[in-house]
Image 1 (tube, rainbow, N blue to C red):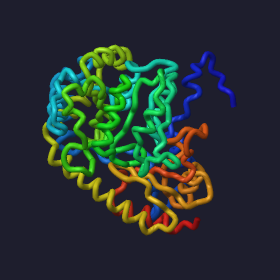
Image 2 (cartoon, rainbow, N blue to C red; image 1 turned 45 degrees about the horizontal axis):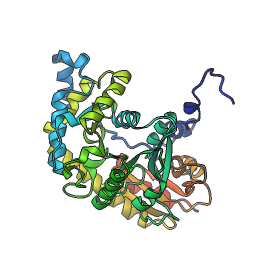
Image 3 (cartoon, one colour; image 1 turned 120 degrees about the horizontal axis):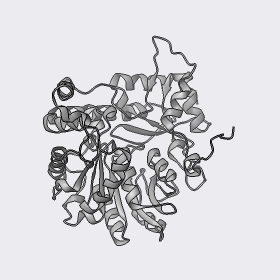
Image 4 (cartoon, rainbow, N blue to C red; image 1 turned 60 degrees about the horizontal axis):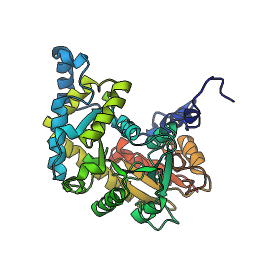
Length: 402
């Protein structure tokens, strides 16, 4: 039915609806037996609240720190900026200063703010496919073309890993940036350090920004630094790094993310943030700072649990005839299903047939025929289930006949 809204921004109108919200509507009118509840593996978010000591710190801030309830600096609390700069240096080496850090209202806002400083209507950003749909949505609403860099056949890159040489062929005079997510959402794959360096070199040669979103870096399977990009003394002439406290400390509802970039870039980011939110939430920043300074051991345990779930998901899909695990890591598994139907239909059917909610690969793909459309792919947010829940998932999928 045509929209009755007048006027309506065509860039927003043509942007697809939020995929997670769309998938939730598949549950309308569906009931689940008490002995077979829904396995909701659609959204990548911790399902438990923060650990009790952090909740106590949050409560204390609400009651006893008046500044918690007031406007704060647009680019974030100085103490949190300094602490994240120190932690970034500790993890990656090199040197990161507090004035190279900005705090945002979640990592989605970090991406939006950075893009607002880089590109305008008619410009282009290269994004590997399958892509994180919120990145695509923001680019589309901003009138910026998301140029798909396929990681699927017939592209020569294998294992859902983007190819810098292929990316080079997509650069035009309108290209402003290359945006990568590692560990990847939705594919779960971890981009090797040499690959990230190759993309940095490519971006630098062409005067582009390299955006690296490491929302899930705390759950990387590799011990030590996942890359050496910050050891380059001139890193901030090209690299823009994004991070989220939400997954690490179960703070999704508090919306706390970060940008690590040049001070000159952040002075432009400040204009965007001041216009949109004025400042990030004081309570969320207090929580993030407390977690950053008190929860290292706890977070290490969270990482090990996620890695155990990754092992369980890989072992489980090995037992399912016709299914193929294409990528896994951090919170996600990206799989190929065996059914003779498009992934959007299969995902909706799984709600009633298996009491499982996952997202179809088509939600992470362009639908203009420029790449594979994800018709046989599903994203499973396995971090939402413990190993027992993963076992239930595999059992339910094994009951289905292609």
